[in-house]
Length: 212
Image (cartoon, rainbow, N blue to C red; front, side, top):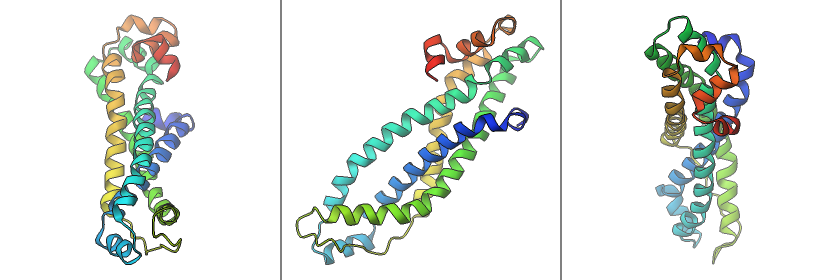
C-alpha cells in the first residue's frame, strides 16, 4: 500500500487501462445476459425478429473484446510488478525473504488491479444502458423483418457486473504471477546493478520488459 500511496500518480495510466478494459467486458456481459433474457426474447418475437440473429452478430464483438481484454489485462498485471522491480531488488539486499517479496508483489497488484476493475465494472452499468440498446437497435435494422424501431426497455444484470469485475481482476492477477515469482527469485546482488537490469529480471526477458 505504501508503494502505491507514495507514487499514486504514476499508477493512474495502469488503473485507467484496467478500468476501460473492464468496462468493455461489462458491456459485453450485459449484452449476453440481456439478449438471453425472457424480456428480450419476447420483444424479439413480438417484432418478428429471431433472437439467434442478435446472438450471432454479438459473437464477433465478444471475440474482439476478449482478445483485447486478455492481452491488455495480462500486460497491466505484468507491468504492475515490473515497474517496482528495482524496489524489490533493494528489499532483497536489505534482507527481505523471497516469500515477502512475492507476497508484496501480488498484494500490490491485487490492490491496483482491484481498484481499476471496480471502477470499470461500475462504469459499465451506465455504459451498457447507452450502448446495448443502441447496438441491438442498429443490428435489428439489418435483419429480415427489421423495422428499425426495435428498442425494448433494457435492464442491467447484477451478475454481468460481478462477472466483469471478477474476470478482469483474475486475468490481471494471472498476468502478474510470472513476474511476481521472478521478482521473488531475484538475488540481492541484483540491487547493485542498474534499475533496467532489475526490470529485465522481473519480466524474464529484456524484449518483454521493453514491450511491457
